[in-house]
Amino acid sequence: MSNLEVHSIGKVRSNQSGTFITLEKKFIPALQSLEGFSHISVLWWFSDYDDEHSRSVLQTESPYKGSPEVMGIFATRSPMRPNPIALTAAEIIQTDFENGIIQVAFMDAYDNTPVLDIKPYTPSLDRVETPGVPAWCSRWPKNTEESGSFNWAEVFNF
Image 1 (cartoon, rainbow, N blue to C red):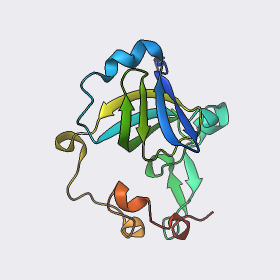
Image 2 (tube, one colour):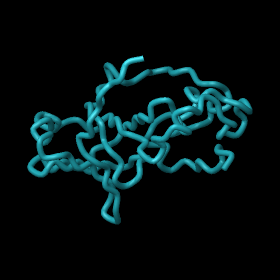
Image 3 (cartoon, rainbow, N blue to C red):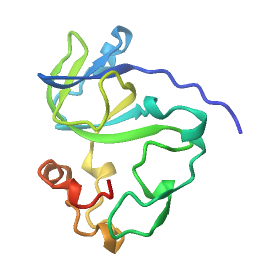
Image 4 (tube, rainbow, N blue to C red):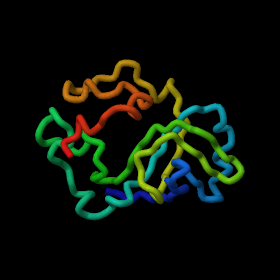
């Protein structure tokens, strides 16, 4: 297995004012032409789960009600994974191009989480019109907009 080198381009910042992606100064020019996109795909590092134990977990007790009792980690959104990489589609609220700050509606990342990359969300490459899902999660929201008001406590085992 080869080693790969990845560097953070910025951090997630969350506070009373909202959720922001703050870029390292040298990456600010990479924001050019992002205007007009309503959403971005953000790749980030589950930094709180970057340890030997978390990276060795391949199966877990189901975190979801009604799903199989034991699930492979690739069938979950768990932060425990061989490579603690996360992906979030986030709605852009506003972008400060001068200071390299993108305010997003929501991200399931903690404050100070390292951001690895940002890509524009484009329906022609990122959207699947009729995705298939197992029966146990078929009643979950059909999109990120509905997810914000969905009672997720009803579907998780914790």
